[in-house]
Length: 338
Image (cartoon, rainbow, N blue to C red):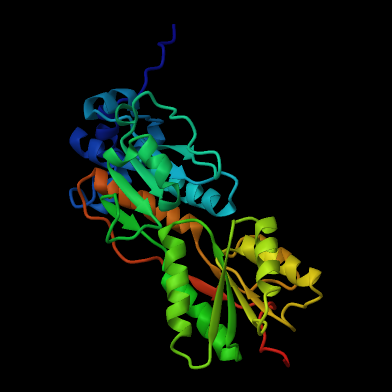
């Protein structure tokens, strides 16, 4: 009579790998760095794989007093950029045995209903965009271990902040347009009170002010194609010299600017150059293709989750902003004749 198969244990893995059970626990709990060698860690993982070993997460979480669940708070789920942030964050979380719950704060609707009776009891930590700060406060997520994205390091609610180098991105756009000879600018600015958009406006004004003869007008707009169309058309219809370049806070705003220009009988870039920021799929769907700044949203999510895991383990997260890259396409050219 065949004996029923038994589930392999950590002791079996330790015996197969020729190490102690403590070493197995460290490796499979991803706490081995600095305690066991890379070779030993590899041997333990291989033994666990060969045996088909799966740790009892429920029991381990009970011992640790953790749910191994973190909350990602974003302003919207329908935005391509934040989909990338989630993908990167979830990838790193899964590698460390954590799950990620999304909590959206749709614009104009307010934060979604708190899915947890007590966020503090149901979560280990929170990763949040500064654009969703109201939702964060509503669920009292700011009282948990917290890492902020797109946030002012000097006034952040979190234990750490992770930022893209937006300042450098705006500087690259300004230098590109100035180098082409542009001196009259319209800033199509997102009308959201958020640190990341304040940085864009401030850096653009600062950089342009260093070049004599430049002018800068600002037109606030909702982050939507229709909203940007209306704002751009209104700004371009005001008296005075027409701008030769429109700097948009977001690729969606740039798409709205394109539509406004075409309705006014103006061409991109012959009459007016246009730039965006994000490098969404939309940027290459526009005609002509959009000059914009590429933000690596998945890397942003990865770095944010790595920082949160470091905070949970009592370590200091890695510092430094994530580099961004200007992608020059056909929407920018030297200004045409007046």
